[in-house]
Length: 279
Ligand code: RIB
Image (cartoon, rainbow, N blue to C red; front, side, top):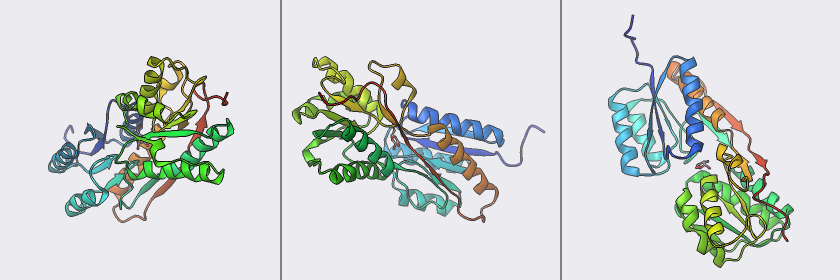
């Protein structure tokens, strides 16, 4: 029988398909979907709220069985309104936590703390951060973890040392001058793509990473091992996140009344070449 009673499809919405963080996440989604005989319909919304709303409505119209939303722009509450009304199970992941019942908690606070500890341990006291100006909830938590550890060591991170730029390679690249105006000895880039763009910018200004300035990223995308210098980063379990999100969503689709599911996943430091002791 080629036609199934239920289409067994899930919708997946991510902000940016060009970022390997989300490709790895989707790899996990695909693996688990396949094991459980579901098919994912995947959309990248390019950080565009209107586009996110559009895909969301279209997925609902096409009667997907459930949704995974790793979306930046639309708020958790807005999503909740749309989806609750339609009675579609969903899971919000990674960006704005929101009110969904099932949860995967990747410890952004710990990640921020690991980042700060690493740079402090290397002797850095004059720091800068590059992050978007309208950060999602998880990024705010990440920054807070970072600041907490600095404060505990008596290191100040003034507001001017937080450079606002889009969370992309270009965003990192374009932040170069603003970063240099702060004269930091080390920079925490809120994700690896930002870090890679910034390193390119610093290189063009004749600066050497890490000898003149250390750069730490976040995510641990595969490119980190291939760039010069190899990028130090905080590892997020991207594939596992995708697998587990899918697992939880399909469990929920198959039993809407089961208890709330939750899973905590750790992050870890990957020290490579782009961070070094202060000279
Ligand atoms: O690279 C994408 C970033 O946005 C990640 O750090 C992830 O946690 C997300 O919120």
